[in-house]
Image (tube, rainbow, N blue to C red; front, top):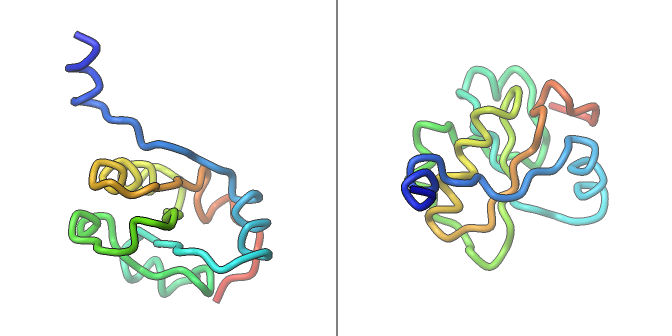
Length: 107
């Protein structure tokens, strides 16, 4: 029964806060995917973030040797995206609270 539950509701893996993301961004270059729609992304995003809408996340192909940080508006879509990426073998890290919680600079 537990295995069935895990298949139906896979874990999205690790999550960090927007404040933790800000600290990481200040120290190093990371892979950051913004899974919001293009119009949301254009409305303001983190400079280093690459727009990759949730509906397309299953097609993502990147380096599996490095963690991938995933952000959206509130943290719900990024949690789903992180789950998909985790199933594909990536170390995906969800940003809890999304852009609503992010206090850093945006463009």
